[in-house]
Image (cartoon, rainbow over all chains, first blue to last red; front, side, top):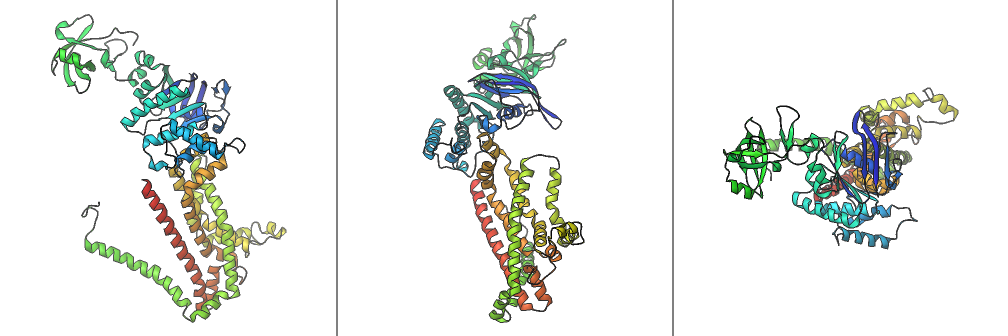
Length: 330
Length: 279
């Protein structure tokens, strides 16, 4: 189901949390709301879910063309996974997952047997077969997250919303679960919106990335597009490592570490290159990272392959020539 | 493992502290409790049982139970409602409400009693209005219930507010997105999470409701066999030099205290154990 957010405002007391937000989320897409804390991304997610209400008269939220601004959360058919999962601690895994079905009015509520069957299916879907009778405090973080997901899916939601889905997990589990979620999304085709402050997560996982900052949307686009053509300095700096080069005249230039070409000092071409001295070398891992100092005293981060590093046979203190990509409207 | 020498005092200091604490507990808490039972039984079992079978004593017990049976459930409702309002919503006057919940702890019970007399006695603010409808509040059961409720109001709310604040509203919000309605959320999500704290609060509320003296004393009028609660009856007997009878009735209150203490430690033991297993 498509979501259309049209000029939504939200203020808490005097504080502007969302300022005229408009966004289109197409049916079946996986969209990341990316931004630092305080950018308004979680507030936006909560407004879509109906857990928070936009300022009166401020705008519309359309689910498949239908305005849901005045529809209570319980009737929006939204699956919401909370940052800390918010599992019901006094219930078993099965009871947690069945909750959304068991609170249905009697005439629409499936029988106990059907509910059990559905719980089993969902546990299988999230790869937690056989854990029906466990309690949340007997599960690992990754398992809890998947129980929360299964619970949200039990109501057959039209939209899936995830608030910092991987925030509370350790690095390895995080990576595994991230890939699993991508596969899961592709299989179910459920329109999914998730909030993250981790640019790598957003770029790797999403079809569409929405970069937010200070209650505004900075840029919307496919990951590649956002990364390669950042529209504002903020997006440039927020997505991946970047060097900010102060220019003698005009605006500052932004260059990503891997975009800089490293050559022998002898190959220096005055028209396009700049000379620099290698200050530090970090060569653990597939990519070597150099810290270099330009003649005007500015420091830059440069990334080259290990192979290239070996060819250049660089060591700290060496002089090099740096080739910069042709500067467009940066 | 603790590190001796960092957080542990010398042996002498430790023994001195523990000894002092033990002495205070023994002198101020255990001895009086023991004295109650010894005094009650001084003239033998027959006198003891007769004092409890006395008509005035039975009426006092009945009145005390009635007052508690009305005020404790009502205060439980109010306490849960107040704690819910204060912890799950942000609204104007919230801080004031939190302070007001504590008011009965800050006001002397006798003053509270006097205020109710001022309000509801025949010459009080609402005296004429009550008289028109032939309602008697002061020197009657309603006054005793109102005074008891005032004094015991904070117990349930005080117990629940920190608990519910610590739990936040995440689970309730999850229930909302899953389609649960208000009462379903309360019964199936909120209540199970607060049940032990609630029981604890109700228990303390009940103990105080049955034992309250000051406020009730002012509004009751000490009409023997009519408006004397158990604590008031004890005082009346004592003032009439019927020491054994007074202490016999006091044993009932002492037993109430012991039972309360027993259940309280059982709850603490149980929930403490569960908490231990959880973290």
